[in-house]
Length: 441
Image 1 (cartoon, helix red, strand yellow):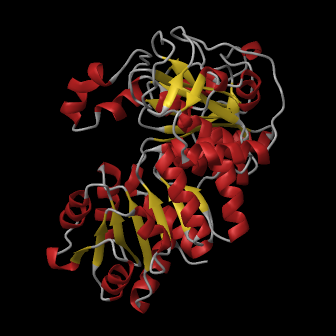
Image 2 (spheres, rainbow, N blue to C red; image 1 turned 180 degrees about the vertical axis):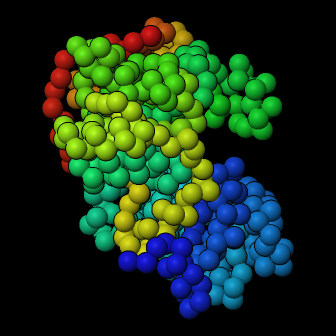
């Protein structure tokens, strides 16, 4: 099997490029287009955004001449433009998922409901789908993967996103026969469960980021979602609801992940966790019972054992997404997918006291944050998955700050694709019951 770079060079020479369709021309999408314009063997031939100027600007910043950017929502015109070597900017995401000239679709919207629909439509149209939308994946990913398998296409998360980077470490260690003790990521900022777009606004402006996006990092929702994706791919679970959020350096990780009876800080093996102090890296804690393996690991300056750390100090987010595109198209392989089904759930927790009749807002907003539980515990409590939260979900009782919000606590006032898919997923896959747990705060 040729390396991806050599295979892409071969495609470039043959003129048989991988045609990519992108939905969402925000920060992630713009970076991906520019990266792919520097690559051989693939091109983003069509991009959709609700503001078409976002799509055209993304191409312009990537070095595409303005005369080669065709703005249209018409299928025949778009197809003709692509076949003529031009690129297309559109406001119609459905055009991308249905266009025969597109081989792989990338969802970079960041909106769970939109991402779920894009993935569903892509799969039904026999296109590979790469998700830069972990929130949609942890909500309905098991169903989407099952559908993709049935349709003969690849459903995958993205390389460069932290779950994908963690999965690469896991696959490496697991293939070599190491025991994988824990998988995790660094957190960039201290956990602040009360963070909201107002409190995050000043820092967001300094960083040139969205206040809502920054809020989702600060209040922990993004971390919970990312580690839920890892759990669903590997079967690993949080050691406790919400994980521990230990503080430590890379060198301290092997001892942190020893069992408590052995002087460490965890109760179980095969867990997901986040660490304050090692961001922006990701890690795998591995171990071996073989004397010769441990001797070799010591010789290689990997530590004294019994635990060792594999640490990757970077993840390049959407700049690495082309690797997942290529793996899906060339080798029909996923970077990360919910191979183990629904193992964990990021559930919805009230960020403040909520009154009956109030509407929830969204991830990174003022009303709720996400917290990871095992899927069994979440199911036992009828906890509402965070990916189902939007401005059309209304609270039907008073809920205290820090309380888990359940299905029975809300009314959906407008039907959405992700709610329909989640209902279908729940009917397709059954979950065991478990004891009730509470959120650690």
